[in-house]
Image (cartoon, rainbow, N blue to C red; front, side):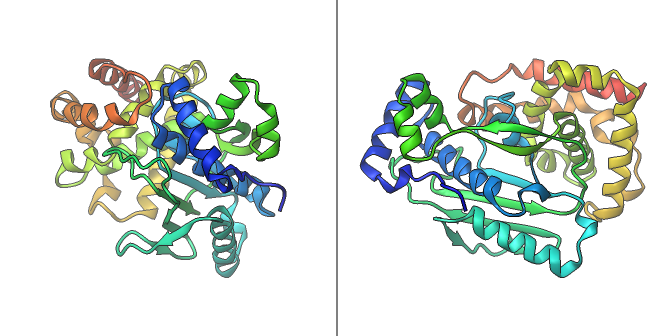
Length: 323
């Protein structure tokens, strides 16, 4: 294992820099602390012997790797590349070793109905020492969620540079000596292409829209609407949305997920246009927009887009699917 981030070992300096960087970056110190541990886990992943077999994906990748969104996230979503080329036991061992490595210096918290460790899916919550002594209703301070899945081939991925808020701050104040001393240099990892993230989030919303309680189900995925706003306004994604590949890729992923997941009941036979998101989005959004405001406002480290803009961008995506 190469050198890994160790600023946390110097608690006094760590706490000082958390507070100094919070004042300069205008980001809450507990967010910067959690970001440090997310970056620490990703750095361990980048240095793992199986780094070439894993891809960083999901909402956290949009803010950490692409700097596309301005919301905080506490989960680290990882996918195994070409999972079908491994045996069941090989996959289980790969996931186990990767998770153990990423969670170095952390303590696992076993939570019934949350913790899951199979050969196809891994989900566990880990605890770090919360030094800033602050709590946030939006983010569970002191905890990280690591998810590793093998359900979908992550397809196209690219190498992106990752750094922590603390590293950004130290670079800004020209303290490269501390970056070198505590191994806080940026590093590169494989990250899912944002176009793929776009369709994964759309398919997730379509799937959960078939739940009996639509509002409740979509409320649990409210961050997708925020992320999709930024994706739909990204130049590369705009071109993708206008291409024939978008509908083709989304349809293929939808079929895959319908074969893979049996919840919600009966959704496997549904078509895109049967989704309540197509039939009654405006009505649904009048309720969901309140959830959006309440959940995203404390999570974001800049003003969140107006709920009307979120709705407009989502409807543009729906319009492309209707063509």
